[in-house]
Image 1 (tube, helix red, strand yellow):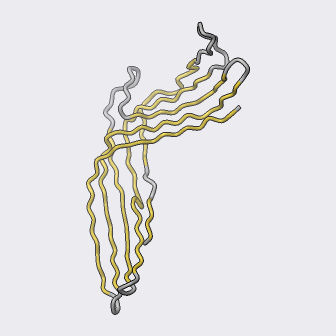
Image 2 (image 1 turned 180 degrees about the vertical axis):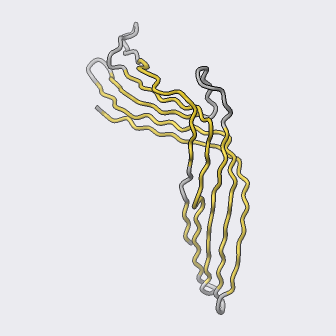
Length: 168
């Protein structure tokens, strides 16, 4: 059997960002600069999907057993409570430069050093797909079956952004 492991994550957000830099004079040509950026994030859409399990080839077909977990802000399901998805969060950027002299400068920056977006009322499904004990269609292909909706509900998701580093 071969393992199946797929993950997908995508989001869209509106950002309001405020930045401020502070400069300091050192000795001679030496100077320091420190910067800070703070962003307010308002989430527009989010999709988080993962599938994990196994696939095995036999003489007659492929056999699979896969568990999925899917959260989509635009999903609608008739059998879960109606609620509006909302998302708010923040991101913090920091940076510093040090000028040794007219020819040498060192700069370090971290975008999204700290961040979080909290998505509330996210539609979420967890599902098991399995064709180990099902029949075949008219063409002889194995028919996949949904062996169970393990959970269909709304949940809260806290998303963090990976920090991005720069050194110059």
